[in-house]
Length: 202
Image (cartoon, rainbow, N blue to C red; front, side):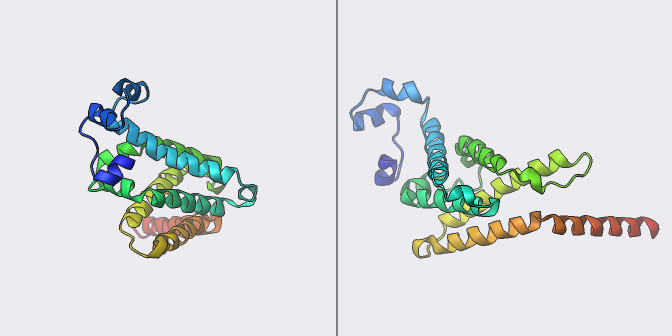
């Protein structure tokens, strides 16, 4: 991360990298097979450290799911901001490419595991055959929401990234409002009514 932030490029080869920091390249290969593997590990570590910090807080355990998720986002983006030069360079031009998503593969797995721990099954309506689909939709929506906020943060020039903080709160609050059972039930009732009316009008 230091190398990339300083030189605005990654080393050409692992051998060049090891020479620059005066260590045996074999040491690198003990842990990683490529720079891509190292990048995946770095982003995963940022997330894991964020989660560890939150779970070490007694106050965090008293939060509801909404505030737990907001706290996670705030902590992740605080850690990303501490390493912004590295993150911005690594993701430059990759925001909308599959390669960027590959770099986040381990991050995504742990992120979704955290989402799963929050127990969003409580927000799933008991509709025959749709429970699993609803759970998967909630998790994937949370992941897409994170990527959306990440892209916004990369372009955020506001002081202390305050606009990103506002987006985090507003987007998560909106998501939880949409998950509210009363909203879902009303939407389903409306859908049934419209479907019924459409069938009857034929």
